[in-house]
Length: 315
Image 1: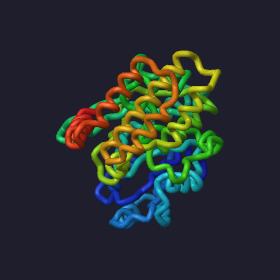
Image 2 (image 1 turned 90 degrees about the horizontal axis):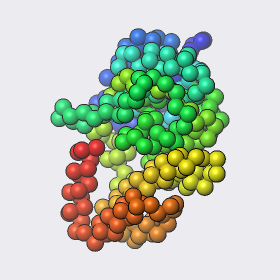
Image 3 (image 1 turned 30 degrees about the vertical axis):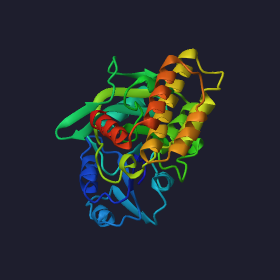
């Protein structure tokens, strides 16, 4: 397809229940200069069959043996002809104005390589949370690292578009990373260009409780590559004091989840080892998190599971 501006890359694995609705949301966009590349990563259900039944010449379906989401996304990027890569998970949905909103950002803020919108988190049972919506409603942030202050990831996969040349320069997704592979790529992109153009318009639905997502699939939430990125950035003298504080904050949260999920999985030796390797400045916030983890290590397993379940229902 000549002159395509946006290549929508959708990795697909066992999402037969969702993929048709996801593709319909893309094809219903008010802005139509795009192509869709669905990469089926060896699905064992009817996902591939359903994707191939999509009646649109905009949609191309590629089938590969199961190699993981990172490789599936990289396959899509490799086959993309657009100037920008629009990432979308196979169980999420775009509002009809998503690409139109993104296109306004790419035209208005060419100094950025990353373009995002706000999103709604579908929690189930008619409960919704929302990502941060900033004032003014639209703009270009100078530092990706400062977005770590917000409750939900400000740059989140299904609501993010990145210039393809920058994705390639950053090295694409790391194969084998099962948790936080997107955050790892965003960090490497931010080293090239830290700006983030945003719109506070809510243009995406994140189906948080969909089956086969990393949150449900992985017992231990170890974002290895992203944690290594953060450890490197904590030592980067080019960051401002405010940026370093946000990087430490994000690192502390990721380490807390890692150690706590080790405890939940019964891997207390692994939890203790990770606890000892914790890096950075020990501010009061960090000390409180670590104190909570020390308590969790001696708490009954049932109590820890209950607390974690409550946390997932709330956030």
